[in-house]
Length: 478
Image 1 (cartoon, rainbow, N blue to C red):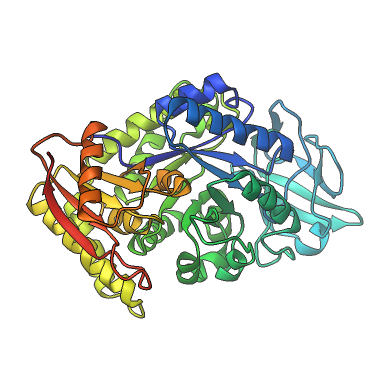
Image 2: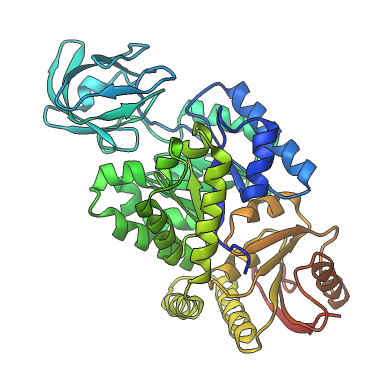
């Protein structure tokens, strides 16, 4: 069985050479993430172009995702080597200072002293280091290191989101966005989303004409407004670092399950992120706990798992990808396909306020899953201009591959994020039975199905004014 869960890998100084990138793609990377919180715009664009060149050279679709910095508060740089913040030590937090040491830490947020209060617990980075604010005096805040640890570069500083006076997306986000939309990026992740309005403020065209928009869920407000955010976004990222700091780590596993379930029910891909294989920044293999964490996320239905510092600055980015691919492939084998599909059917039956097109698609994709399962088809061939049919089918997590054909190059790239999808480009729109037969033959030529096998073909070929998947065929592979 091929791996169904997708892998998102962050590209950074350790992985931005063509040779390393090529090895990572061959090792299992489906989507290359470029974070914009570190480095310059020119460096990020150079990484983007390198990913594109590697994808073309390998003749393999690789989605490109840029992650906008958002209104995240960051500490001034500690430098490129790790620095220890010792437990119980006192440090000064100084807004506007452009460098940091273990004793005096710069913060890039001018309103820091107004927005934090004595007694606040502030998380650094992904939360492995935390600071307790003791007093605010003049131009600094004095904090005690409640939990010590190593840090480097410009880690984030988590301040409760309801105190921050910055909205998302920021002016800097929009400037970065313009540059990458012009470059043709496939996917854009928006940081610190609080409501659907934050996504609308991007002003991009709907995908696939514009990038697929990923809303990062990392604030209390985002959890409270989750239904509207899922409806507006193209996909969701569970950013567990800030989310755990905001709502408490004891809530995080349950929120992760709920967000995953609601996203998949709505036909939206969901990425599980933060500290997946963090030990592999320096270690040759993940811990047992990390492997179990990844396997549990896959069991919960996540569409993709994400590597961050493991591949951006880790000592062995190729090894981290390979380890993730092995763990994900093995977890996929244990996935309870039938139980998940039944659960999704029940959730979709209880959905209210859906459009006619959505109800037609629900009925057709449920029928496709049932027919494909009962007839033991070799693959479900989905034909889609926008990816809607593919993402709708992927909700059911069928046990057979989803071969996703689209005439739109950007749709093919965006479908690299969709669970189970094998995205392929077709040179023409498919609106007749003969054209559908041609794609069955093309799937055979790719080695995805074999002569004599039965396949299901799913497409939207009816009334174009109603966005719906309305054609289902069972066909024998010639």
